[in-house]
Length: 125
Image (tube, rainbow, N blue to C red):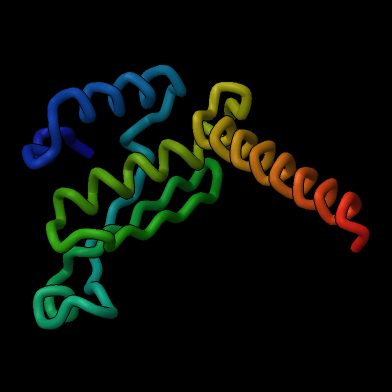
């Protein structure tokens, strides 16, 4: 997998992804890449062209499919970023930004629920 095709993405985002991949020690040679036909909304461009990306990482048994955009290069970048997130979750959960965000949302939801229960008890429900 080469980073030369990511011309539609800003240099900072590509560099940040390269740094994460290097930090996690991911071997890009092990990632199997396929381009498949898309499906769903989007009409002819989505349904008749192979712009959806399927990435496989056999060492961890991960499979990521991405079809968020109409451009193959953007889908390729997004799929690689998603794959990196999944690998980071399995290899190094303490540094995962995704897990930190999930924990933050859980805490916020818990506080909201606690506040709601407190109000219900006060009102006599």
